[in-house]
Length: 50
Image (cartoon, rainbow, N blue to C red; front, side, top):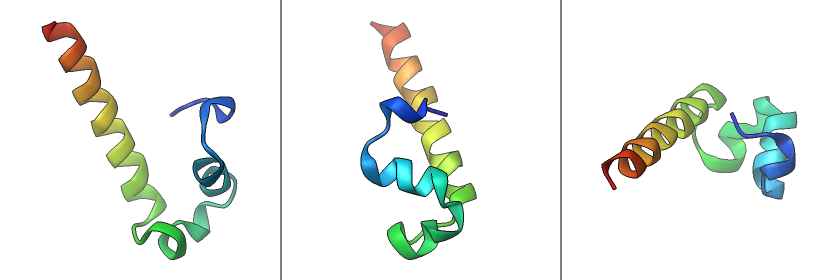
């Protein structure tokens, strides 16, 4: 996960209040963590391909 200092205010709020995630963005905190992890994997793969 990103360091808190690198987060935008919304992500920082969600990180500090994970039970509010569903209300704020419509997916669970666990789904958000998986989404971020998958995005980081894809980003890493794209960098390796260059």
